[in-house]
Image (tube, rainbow, N blue to C red; front, side):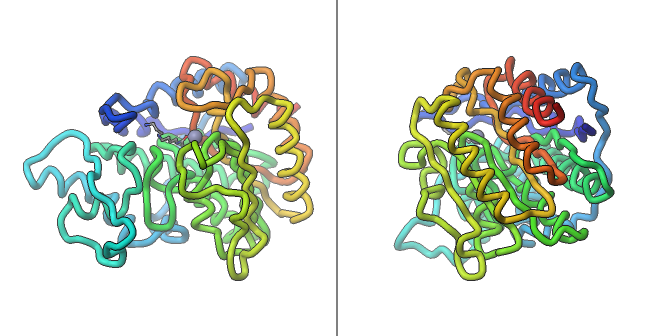
Length: 341
Ligand code: Q9C
Ligand code: ZN
C-alpha cells in the first residue's frame, strides 16, 4: 500500500490545550506521526510526499471565509504584537448573534472554533494544508487505479466542518479525499469513521448528501467529546436523510461489542453499494489511549483491517486520532496489514 506523508506536519507544534481546567501540552503532538512513519516503513510500505493541489480544492468542502481565517489568523495575531499559540475564549451560544463574524481576531477565533483544545501556532496553516494535500494525493492514487492508499495526515481532520475547527482538526482531510473521489468518477462514496470520537465535521459536510454515506462508530457523546453531535437519532436531512449512521458505544467497549457494531456498519455500507471507500482511521479506540475509554487491544486492529477489506472497493485510509504515542504506529500498521492480508 502506498503511503503519503509530509514532514511539514511538524510545523504544527508548541500549542497548549485547555484540559480539565488547565493549560497542558497538546495530546496531538508531532511525535505521533514519527511513530506511524516508522511503523509503516517497517511494514515495507512505500512513502511519498504529497502532490501540490490548488487551494481551490479546499473550497469543495470548506467555506472560503473560513479558509481565509485559518490562513491568516496567526499573522493577524502577530500584528497585534502577540506571539505563541492562539485559543478562543468566547463562543456564540444560544441567545447570541451566530450570523455575524466579528472583525477582531479574538471574536473570529470564537466564531470559527468550537472548543478551547485546538491551538493555532505560526506553522499550523502550513501543516494543515500539507495534511489536506496528503489526503488529496491518496485519493488521486486510488482514482488512478490503485486499490488502496494511506494518507498519514497530521493534524487530523474529522472534527473540522464546513466552516468550523476544533478537536485538534483544521481542514477535513477525509472529506477532501471523499469529495476528490466524487469529482473523479466515483458516483457513490462511503465514509467509515472508526476514530474514538464522533466525526462531527465530516457529518456536517455531508449531512444533506445522498451520494456520500457517513457512518461513525464512537464513544457515546453524552459523556464523550464532541458532546454535541454523534447521537444515534442523527440520520441526515433533506436528500441526505438516511445517509448518516451513528453507532455510539459505551465506556469500556471491548472488541466483542465493537466488532458487532463494525459488522452493522459494514452491512449498511455494503447495501449502499459504494464505488469507493474512505476510512477515517483513528486508533484512539486502543485500551492504552490516555483520553479515550474503549478497550481494543493491539491484536484487534488487524482484525478491523481485515473486516474493512471484505467490502472489496477502492479504499483511502486517512489518519485521524490516537494518543498512546508509543503504540500508535503498531496499531495503524496493524489495520493496514490486516486490510492487505
Ligand atoms: N482536553 C481526535 O481524536 N479534547 N480529536 C478532549 C481533552 C478533544 C480528539 C478533552 C479530543 C479531540 C482527532
Ligand atoms: Zn479521536
